[in-house]
Image (cartoon, rainbow, N blue to C red; front, side, top):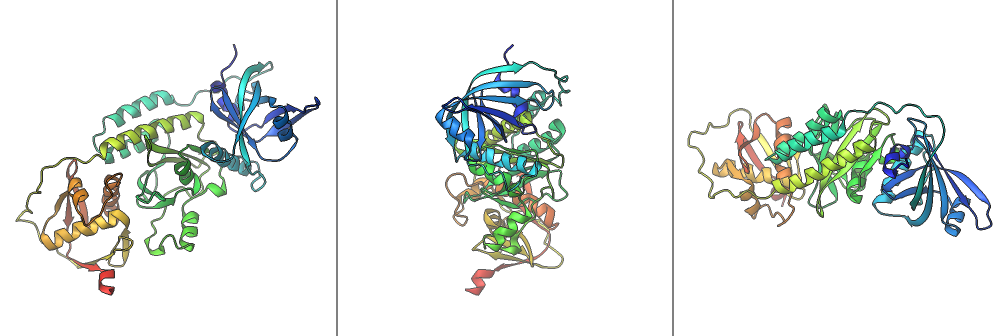
Amino acid sequence: MTPRLDQLRRCFEGAAPALLATCSTDGTPNVTCVSQVHFVDDEHVALSFQFLNKTRENILANPAGSLLLLDPCSGARYRLAIEYARTESEGPLFECMRARLASIASHTGMAGVFRLLGADVYKVAAIEAVPGPCRPQPERRRDRLAALRTLSRRLAAADELETALDLVLEGLAELFGMQHALVLCSDESGQWLYTVASHGYAQSGVGSEVALGEGVIGVAAQQRTPIRLNWPAAEYAYGRAVRAAAARDGLIPLDTEISFPGLIDPQSQLAAPIEAGDWLAGVLYVESAEEGRFDHQDEDALVTIAQQLGVVMRCLIRPVEIPEPLPPPPMDAIAPAGRPVAVRYFATTQSVFLDDDYLIKGVAGAVLWLLINDLVREGRAESSNRALRLDPRLRLPDLDDNLETRLILLQRRLGERCDWLRIEKLGRGRFALRLDRPVSLVDVEEQQA
């Protein structure tokens, strides 16, 4: 039986090089190793174009070729008759192949030597199984289709955004064995991603940031394509090195850095964009200390989960209609006690400090400053998502303001950093700010003006 192209995806993992045979116009054959073969769809593969060599010359003159693939698990070999179609030197396919090539180069000791010039796309005209001895097929890993069904059912039942995020991360650990995972959301500028939920780390890292285009996460967001690396590649690292470079360039104030929660030395990484239509909500990311941890089925599963999460997020961030006005503050509220705390606010960056300790910035910082002013000066503790959206002091955009994810970030950041100031949920779309110590409100830039 002739195998289908999608059944050969283990051959595209980069563990065993492929052989490409081409022929010049005068009939002279040429055989070379190919660093990477990439599955594009059921009829196309892409080969890495790295050098201006004889193979390239042959293909441009005579587009027919023959590709020999090896299954690294069973030893089975397959011969593909292919025909050159086009070369892509930018975009999602190119960036995905460039990232994987860097991973393969690092694994084979060729880092700094391999450089992708283009992704050569070929149409597969025929597939032939090459006769020869094969090892038995390896035991299947956990049934990912059943796991995907279970997680999808749980996610579909989520009625709050925070619940949906936690269900995804807990499900990845329980059902897929992916113990280290993050959800990052796009910020209002479209230039940064911020961590809103994590699983498997000593510190949650909520509020930590990754620049668009930086590392596995940033490239996946920028190109809106999954990125899977099964060996570490220095140029696709992230965290402290990326943020240190950004700080040197003046992009991040050093006193407002939140440490990225990722593994110190991940050996396998997989990132998938979270999307709904043309809206980029963020990135779903998993990593492992084990080399070769994520295969193509893991990638398929994570992409599917990320897409479903995007749709759920789009549904759950719609403003909830709550009758206004809000109820008056309770008359029996307990007065805050203990050592006073200076809540310091920098309007330019919307940064909030508790005494001299950095807490949060951006929209989340502006929201906290507004809420704590309303509580201290007017005694109003309760609010709602809708009220915040309508409040002119926040100046939120009309669309895609990410308010819900910012509130989750703020709630979790307060839970980690402060035991006397917290946000309590009162139902969907409604919450209250609770304050257990006296505070002084300091608008630093206003005082300096």
